[in-house]
Image (cartoon, rainbow, N blue to C red; front, side, top):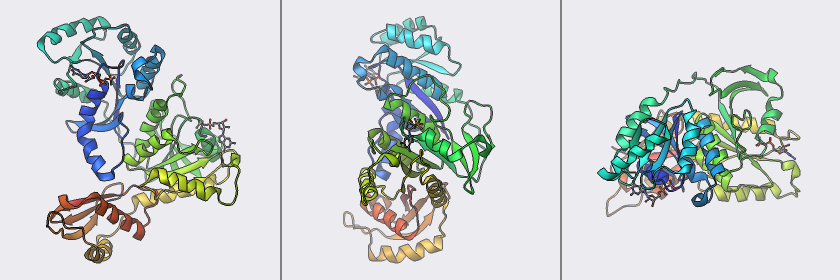
Length: 434
Ligand code: GDP
Ligand code: GDP
């Protein structure tokens, strides 16, 4: 689980330019693997070997050109709640503005590392102009030019140095389930239906810290850790009315989980916000179970679930091998099934397949359907193995890995899914040089 760094600041100071610069390098690689459209405001990066998640909070605010002051306040408050360090970006071109002062006032009271970053400093004159930002009362500042990257090295050195060492959460053999979804989907109701009263709590592992996330439960004969999200303890006064809030609150829980139980309101369907959370989980290579909640409210005929399922699978293509369970947190319908399914997905995710088995199946199969020749060259895949990673990743060793394109990798992934049950689990296929 990595640290979270949030970028705050008023519109047009250059937050997204800066964000893209830091994220691009890695995203390009991830994109090539899964071919999925990305959330442009959340991503992972690393500096000096330390990995962290970066969130461009401004990017989640709708119509950010005429942002209301109240919205920026909420944005900042949330960053304060959720992030481990905050980058407060201002713009040397426009100098100190009233909105900058408002943000500074909020940040001055924070006891987390705050980095005042003066952007668009692309010449010596502007470097001098930057001194006026001392007036914000946040002390030292960093000057950068997001557009060409100058100054970012010094800034990132300081940021990663200030990030807390994440204590490795007690390595538990138990599945960690995160209940995620948009506000009002019924997450709290589901959790309450599931765990009933506190007597089912076995221990509270994280205990006193702010990050009290994992709580161990024993229910229906299963033992699992439940990862806290918005529904359980709302830390902030902020009402979760923007997409940003539910997504951002999901980030930490998802990163911390093995399997995400994505709760959606049957009446609202698998809309944009839910999709964002889904892809967030997929991108983090987590197991996923989709829970269509409030099923008691839906008028049903004999084909309702089939049609509903089909519609969802269309939205989540190409990662369609995901269980969908229709539940009602209110009537407790199928909540046992939901947990049972999550346990199965967890088992799929931790499954290890013997190299000999893989090669027995895949070498003949590849022989019959080899990768298409590329530029007149033939690709010869020699052997396959599963990598020793927490989630399923498979390496296919061959002479010309760069010539194997996505469609063929997808073909291999589908074959893996056919032969071994990986339902609910993102599977990565890599071609390696041998
Ligand atoms: P956001 O609203 O804070 O995300 O700001 P954007 O990243 O969209 O940038 C706003 C404008 O500032 C765009 O026109 C950028 O091209 C410009 N900009 C961003 N970084 C720099 C920089 O380092 N120097 C200059 N001169 N312009 C920049
Ligand atoms: P959260 O914001 O995702 O934690 O959602 P809540 O658990 O607070 O639920 C939002 C609203 O939906 C509440 O009024 C619940 O009573 C209602 N609700 C939750 N689950 C169900 C369900 O299965 N059926 C019905 N009819 N209502 C539900």
